[in-house]
Length: 71
Picture 1 (tube, rainbow, N blue to C red):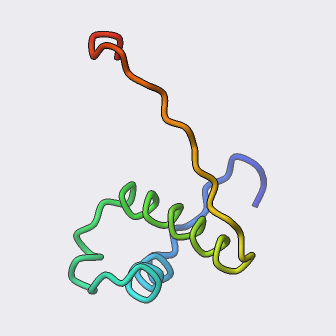
Picture 2 (picture 1 turned 60 degrees about the horizontal axis):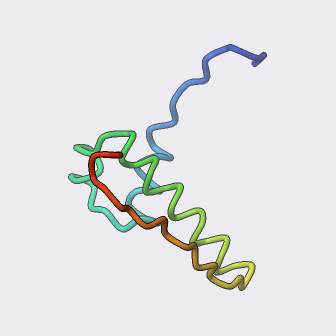
């Protein structure tokens, strides 16, 4: 497939990852929005890479919010 062409979605792989890697039951996987699943999968990939590469956690400094009206 070239650039810009659509690829078919592999629903069986999405359900497999959701059930076997993320730990959700089948029924919950079938009701989950894809965007939520994708966010969880991105987090899972980061954690998996951390565990397999035996990395160290990096603490990020949080910006201090001085006023809620700036948001």
